[in-house]
Length: 262
Length: 255
Image (cartoon, rainbow over all chains, first blue to last red; front, side, top):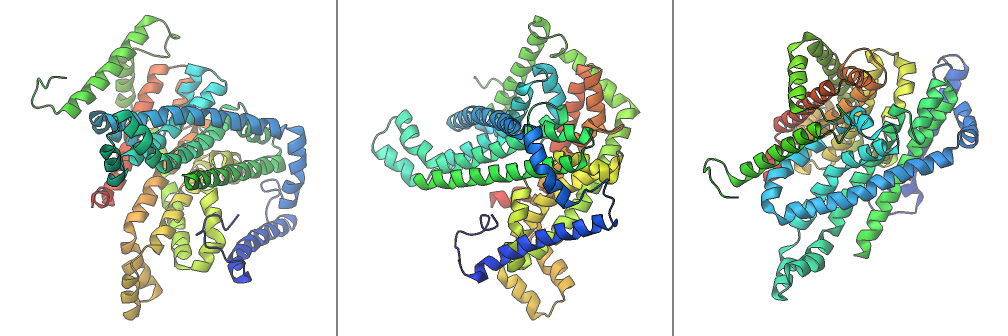
């Protein structure tokens, strides 16, 4: 896991594995110290349960709280938002690239929207869509849209001149030029946008689930916290963090695989 | 689109057309009765709510509360992030040991830590500040670490040849040389700290902008909610561009 973020150059020797082991060791040592501190009464166990208890409550959470079906629910919401993001975002980006005037008028708006706390609109979405999965999906969709639009725009505008000229010298029609030259050249950048969009979608989907107490993994945390099931809450948080980290890694791998297939 | 008024460029004209179209469609929808009443209140009602909001001192008090929380979170998370980022950026071993944890934990949803923050820091502003701090730590740390690595080696050698102490190196070489990535990190950090704090306020609090928004929701005062969202968006987009401008991000993008 620790190697994934670094350069692809890999050394199998111990010298290469040492940093990763140090990282992992520090993590384990941290949990061990916490365990000792809590068990000795240095830390209040009604605020922080010992790590061993958190680990022990994992099976309970998985069996009793239907974590799997919750996970599927969150993932479905996230992927639905992702499909909508891809369709609307990519076509929005393409449209803006086609009509320069539209780009000049709207690009700063989209960029500004990216920096606005869009997720704060969730009470509004609750009123519009009701307390159901669509509120969550739409929230994920709206908050993930700006990066997809901007990256699509960036990808198509950044097509190398040589490629564009090749298309021109073959006398391609604008449609052919788009599908044969511009779009394939922009795909890697578009994937970056979709990956970012999906990350935002996941963050907001889980966040809104937690906030409105509805749906999948986010709700689980809220529910356990309200029941004051301390070790369960911590275990659920760990579980959600693990799932999202896994999600990011899969996205990264998928992006690398897709761009290599180009 | 004929350029009837030479003072307006086509871009401005198109923007005006888009804005006016949206407003017209909005007003039409609000009067059509197709949607639930009050989901799309008339522009007049929103305008009145906006005026009401800004004319009363209550809003400014809550704004000050939220601004204080976000500011404290940015200060704490930013400083911590900066220190961790500089250490990780300066040391290859530590960076390879710990940075990927930061990299992957960075984008996880932070709001889910709120129940834990309540237990640690209480239901008051403390837990909101803690959540904002947690949110803003990661982008600042990652940007600082990346910024540290892209410093021109010549600058570092200059510092070393002047036998600068560590503190001097940090304040005279590192920080000035990496101000762009740091400002960018602070900009991202400000955004997520704002979101973290406000979301926490909507979940559990008795003051702050997040509280006002969720209060408007619970009494179903939609014009007021729209008014508050509009003001919030303008403020946060403004704050974001001010931080960006301060760091001269515009100028480096163009060069």
